[in-house]
Amino acid sequence: MIHHLRQPCFKLIAILMLSLCAGFTQSPGSIPLDALNEMQSRNVKTERMTYKGRSALRVTDTAPANVPDGERLVILSKTEFRDGVIEIELTGEPGASAGEGARGFVGVAFRVSRDTAKDTLKYECFYLRPTNGRAEDQVRRNHSTQYISFPDFPWQKLRKEFPEKYESYADLVPGEWTKLKIEVRGDKARLYVHGAQQPALVVNDLKQGQSQGQIALWVGPGTVAHFADLRVTK
Image (cartoon, rainbow, N blue to C red; front, side, top):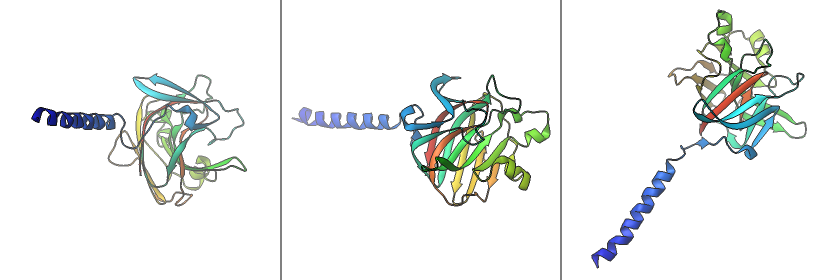
């Protein structure tokens, strides 16, 4: 009699253990980057691959020369973000045919919204210039990280009107995995690099205020980039 009573208990424990193990296969807030049908690519090519030991999404600039900065993205269709934390591992480097001014521009856009009638985008963004991180020119080093607000506040406008305010230094290596964390609350955001306790760049006046929208993987002209391990905590 006791033997028969124990069997259901053992089965229940086994089911609970399997459920717990299944819960650890994907981190809370993890967003997979392998569902290409859930992404909207604009002026880029996307490929799933293994890059330097990690399952990654490669994003390559394919835009014609007349496409302006800010129009090369992979919008993650099923995301919706206002305040919270975005964490990701990424790499960026100039492609083989990139122009002299290419820096391997790579980053993350957030609060992305689209005017479908005009097919225009609005978003906030932090990105890196990996080839600047160890340049011999100190001015280039000071331009390693960048905040922009598309389309009204591109980097050229911000650098001219607010020199040094929206850029900073970070130690970067082209083509190597770099950990980014972006914290957003209201009209404020902070960018952390390499798991540092202190932010590399602080923005206290996001140009679009307290908006919301999707998350996008962002690249600049002439860039080949890789993205992995995206997590979002709201």
